[in-house]
Length: 495
Image 1 (cartoon, rainbow, N blue to C red):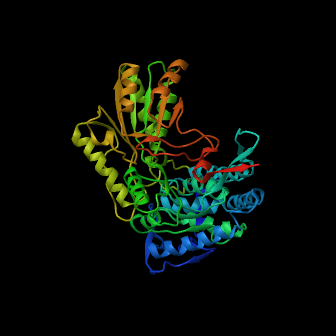
Image 2 (cartoon, rainbow, N blue to C red; image 1 turned 30 degrees about the vertical axis):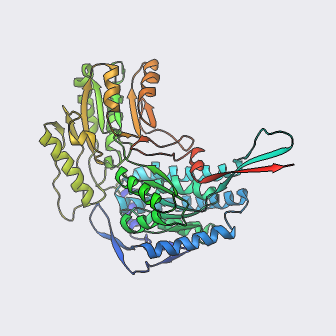
Image 3 (cartoon, rainbow, N blue to C red; image 1 turned 90 degrees about the horizontal axis):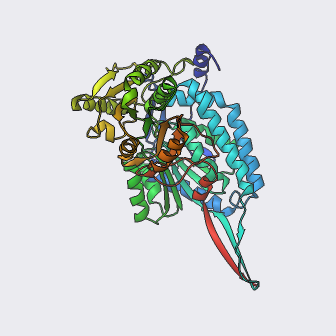
């Protein structure tokens, strides 16, 4: 890990990309429009980035479609596609410090988290997807001897991907790696709040030997570029990570156009349940703090609802407050920093509004509070914890997407499950217990796509990631991700 001074020195040398990447080259938006990309730590201008709209979408789709039909990627032998993707991963690894720095400057997440989690996870996902693709076999159906029925998987064509701002590199790779490995042409629209690393990795993909038009990146806004992608008739599949509100809009756009498949990883309001048989209260409290204050709470699986058995509340709160105070907002380029700024002023204001609403609704403020904004000094806020919350309060029911924790109590296992499931979301959940039977029993009853026991957020590329209810459909990571980006074909042959 570089020192703070070394990261500052590297910052002075890095040139961030700012134009769209279409058909193997950087190009300005056809309208000439740009938007400002701001460093949330000091509010300085990083770049004026191309603001793409429907005209740029048409251009990128035409290039992607032509490339797909040419077969230079879609019909390339899986082993050869694998080698190009592996070379791309090697190039990304060679530029890992640059990529980590770009995301820290662009989004505000700590450099230690970028180096320790985001970049390694992204590389692992790309390499794992590359290795998968020449091991994906077809099937032969059990027919009578006069017939042969082949079941095969084929790439879909042009795939549109829209990613969020909270994990710019990692969320992109979770989606583009399996889509590209399967032989599709991809058009990526990264969030306008953190588009820079996506543009850089596209440039490195070309350097690795990926044919022009296979991977295109269109920075821009959701209501322009995003909507145009969702409505386009030549796009076969749309994969999205973001809010449940926007996810619903994208489904409508797909229905209004060509009924393209829409895969959604949407919002979350994950519960954390700590039972009275939990033997290590200190570890559970540290885990609960990590689950809400990591990445400034800007995490879809953040456990923003903490349910404690009433008998352990007093002891647990002491340890929780101690763990929370370790998350001191500071310059994310300092490797010692555990918590950077919010991504922008809009998110800062949104989270501040939720904190004020919790106060107005009568929750007890245990730590933090409404932050004071100082112009030009970044969008920093402290960890905030409320106790005595309940399910009538807005900040308990809605996704805050910030470092705000609601603490509540329960008496029985049945009540804990009922409270945990009392949400429109169903992305993740955590259980802390030393009773193995209870861990199995409760995890089965939780309405959630993922459950962690005596931990939070753990996993690797081998396991699927996704939720139920208003948290979306489909899965990222693992073999199951390839199901989203391939089509099943049945070929019946009379012998």
